[in-house]
Image (cartoon, rainbow, N blue to C red):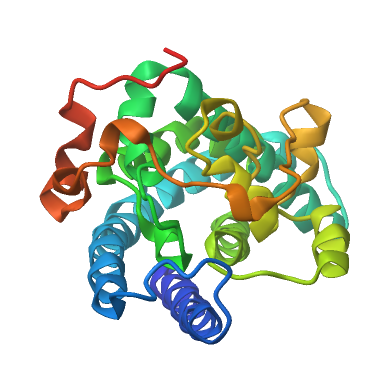
Length: 271
C-alpha cells in the first residue's frame, strides 16, 4: 500500500484543524496570554510549529514506513489479534481505536514516570503559554522513541496501516482541540468529557503544579483516566498556570533551548 495519499490526507486534516483553532483562539481566547505583545504569539507559534514540522517529516519519511513493514510482516506470518479473530468492519475499526488509544495512555503515563522519557517529554510541558501550537511541541527524540515503541504493539494487535493513520488523524485533531486556548460551554464540556479529552480537562494536565501535571494522561478517549484513577479537575481553571518552573527562564523557550532541554540537568519533582 502506498502510504503517501494517507499521509497527505492526515497532513491536510492537521492544517485545517490548526487554522480553525488559531482563528477561534484569536476571536475568543480563554486566557489573554499575548494581549500586551501580539508579536510574541507569532514567535511562540513559529517555535512550536518548527518542532512540529521536524516531527511531521520524521513521521512521514521514517515512522510510517516502519509501521508498514511491521504491518506486512504480521500479515505474512498471521501474527496479531486481528489476524486471529474476525470482526465486522465497524467493530474492527472501533476496537482498534480503543486498543491503540489504551497504548497511548500507557505510553503518555510512562513519559511522566520514567526519568529518561520525561527528559524528552518535558519539552512539551515547559510551554508557559499553552495554545493549539503546543500540540505540535514535542522533541524529535520523543517522537522517535514513540515510533519505535509502537512497533511491537502494531505486531501484537495485527492492525493495518489504514487503521493506524485514521487513528492518528482523529487522535491528533482531538489533541489540537484540547490544547487550544479556547473555552467550550460548561454543558458541552461535560458531555464531550464523557468520551473525549476536552480543553478544560487537558488544561489541568499542563498545570505547573506537579500533582495536576501527573494526571489526565488520556489522548483521545477520556475514560482511561477514570478507569485508572488519574482523572482530575480544578474548580476554577482560570487559576491555572502552565509550564514547568524549572524551565521558566527565557533561554529555555528558544528553539535551541527546546532542542537541548533533554540534556539539561533539571529533574521532574516526582523523580
